[in-house]
Length: 564
Image 1 (cartoon, rainbow, N blue to C red):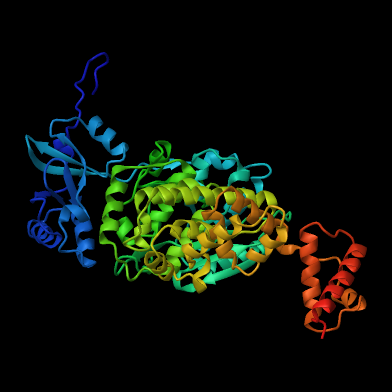
Image 2 (image 1 turned 135 degrees about the vertical axis):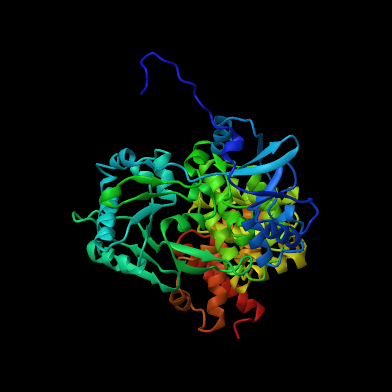
């Protein structure tokens, strides 16, 4: 029995008391296969080179299964990790783990004696943040979430909101900034989607191979429209080889979060009435979000799926996240592996388009350039000062196009800018790798674009019709390439052409020209082209002036004997 006023000693566990993972130390130069065999023989969970570098055996097993067994083990999984002495207290260990360390090595002197792996984070609650959605415009979202939770529980499943929605809640974004909702169901996601569609209406699209569905056009009982709802069964993924689409099997929410790319994307909030608002954050995504840190879930994450590099750039740009050292090592490994025959060009192309769909894509593109990510398009891709300058020009052009209400495919334009200064063989290989339909804007001869720009420089400022004559036969990709290659005069000519010149038409119709005496046949087209050019040059402005111009043109044709 405790005595009042009596002091009792406080026992603080030491790092040596917290060790629970057996470690084996092997040389840095050993291959994955050799380090793995040694670890298996000793029953170790962690392989270390010293008190600074270590990795989990599970990561070495994954690397070996993907055919990377001959690589040095430190290249495929070895990472600089935190280390403390066995006498360090528990608070120091927890501080390191909370700061993003996936594990902490314990040393005695210079020798590693064990490891402390991060344990699942305690569950928090987002109930109060969810309740802030009360009232327009958040009421519809709140109704959807509560409905999803009740429907899931009625089917014997737990429903969760995951991904971006959880991040938005943690960032305190207003309801009108919360866009689409990702729902995860511990059960049959497609059956749940059908039941939700019965409740909300809308159009349900099913993707049976992945156990997912998308609902669009749904509404609350009062008719308020709800944004797109993506529904997926909680699943486990297994990658047979780097870059391949995963094999999917049903699982609980914990494996589902563990299969994801980054810690900030591996969070979920329970929607079931019995656990409403409970936050699941096993990998410390909330801490990383608060620290503006981009962290992969395991060292081979970007080898597993290289398109995560593009996703990482989008997250970093959108959320102002800084890649940590683990991300940088994972990126270096993904680029070193290099060839991903199982990774389709369509997926790479789609990721580029998703970057351009961001509200502010330019920071993401700058990050990808800096990271060397485009070497996955072709190993010979080289980033130059011109590469960055072309992207800056593309940004200027898109800003002008929006103001002029000219429709331009931003993904195609930036692809053109990214490939413009590569050698022709590299650019062509990139286009083939990305499986761009028909070559798109990217399949362009930069030399031809520069030649077109030079022709435009020679056109006099008072001959708009001549500008139109030069540009009219060119494909739009070539015109855009000439804009990227040209100076102020060239760009002014091209902007005029896109805004006015290519749509220029005479006021007179073909019938009007025939009525003025032009014989039916090819001469009608010639007369119309003559009127169009006069109009572009400002030499005729009314239909009466066009009639006079046709009469004069007919006299000239008769004089030359071209009227037959």
